[in-house]
Image (cartoon, rainbow, N blue to C red; front, side, top):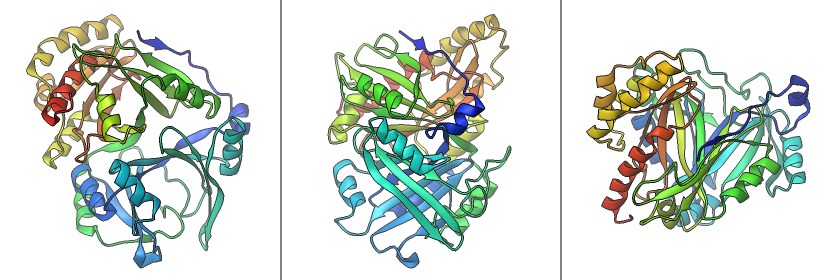
Length: 409
């Protein structure tokens, strides 16, 4: 059963004094076996720009870091340069994946202190990073598995200020943090991507997979420690096929800007994609996928397919009924028609869903590395703020076909 939590607005006075007011997803950090090659993959296949690094050439002897940007999306790819580095251990246990979902805040120290007071566990005490250009303050807490949330406090101006995404084009970011330097390593690829954009603009949501019976535990964590609210929930009647099922609750920050769905497996005849994730993630919870927002789903999917991105295959039978399901709902709610060309939607294999607020288009990549533990969703919202409930069955059937090929169903 799907339920919706009531939305409440945050008064400016409350936002000004609440240390856990989250401004944005500051960045997402991936631990990688080879960050340099991973950076090339994400730039080539997904259109990211990489202009800054922190590596041996800039004084980092223990690890290498590549800063990738597109629109308002910021990734850090980190690899350990010795076997004792935390990233080396992490990759050995889990493969490449998300280590840190970092949030921009007004005051990192106060945010960390409040989270600890609320019952959180520290992952990093408040730390100042300073050079001639300014100071950034960071502090971090632990969440499910080995994932952490870093609070990042940036100055309002100067090279370390958080760049604001422009209306039509991605910004050229300032310097990410002290220590990062400009690189010419990906110059030709960066120039190609500037002329041939993929149109990805925001991190829409990030999905975590946890063990059976632990979803409500982590829901309570986000409510109590982080001040999130329940935005939407799905049970095994919503997300199920003849073979597998899962349950999910979507948590949203106090301002509703940051959404963190939490999934757990549900009993079924065979193994769900959440359980497959856990099996190949050392039986440890973690971030399963990132949803990246675009304003033009058709253009973005076409561009990504032309770059070699592999997406889940949607059967033709899906398109024999989707418009009969979607368009009457749209008209009944006074939302008009889906404006995208229907044949192009089918040709590109895009999923469509609608609710009383509008519609959305979405499509999911296949796993981004050999372990089936991380993938991206490309999503475009035309009013709908939901997650494609009407597509769950088709999506899961497509996922199950891939699981079967891997021998994991």
